[in-house]
Length: 121
Image: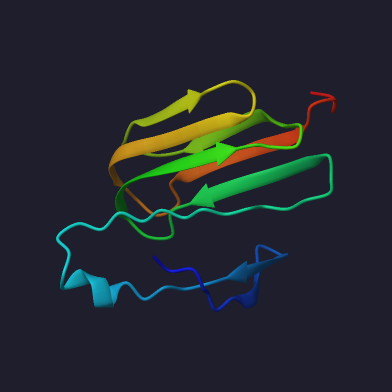
């Protein structure tokens, strides 16, 4: 488990972001298969927020889980996938899991619009 990351400030599509890179080559000799799980907390103070996940390189499937707290709700979402089947499971307004168990190209992912529960649709 890696708990400390070296973040660098970058500009992506005209917006500011923090990026951490993890060298996985040290694991490839000991593993025939590697599952990666990332747990993040996304702070925000606005009543609307667009969250996105996109595979940066081809990969053998993924699972993205979002759980909202403090009155936030998933208002809408859109998946980006070509040539594979993606499954979306929504458990109420505050949870969403998107997964794909097939080989996907870079750019495959999901965007989710979240907001406080009393914001307009």
